Length: 90
Image 1 (cartoon, helix red, strand yellow):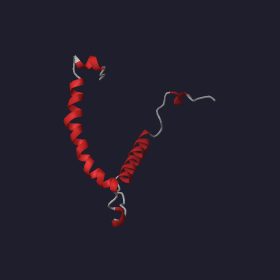
Image 2: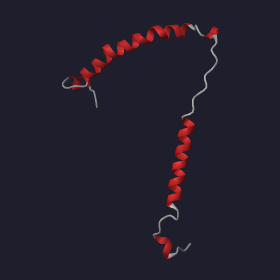
Image 3: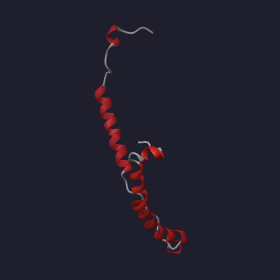
Image 4: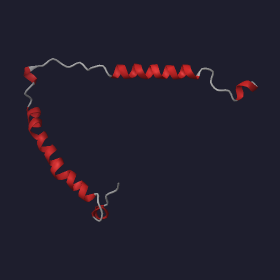
């Protein structure tokens, strides 16, 4: 297929239309994603599940272990000379 000399190095015909279309599509997708989710009705018979009660008790314990033991241990291991000993990589 032969090309015209004018079309060989020419830019797309309507670059502004593409930009506007992309902007409108982005705005639409953001507005759809920002709609609130619907919640289920509260059911008293399902509210006291034993695993949920255990999670209420154990979650703060896990957060405390993370902040008091694991994060300081990671900080300690991520510095020299211990970094080389444990093989920590950045």
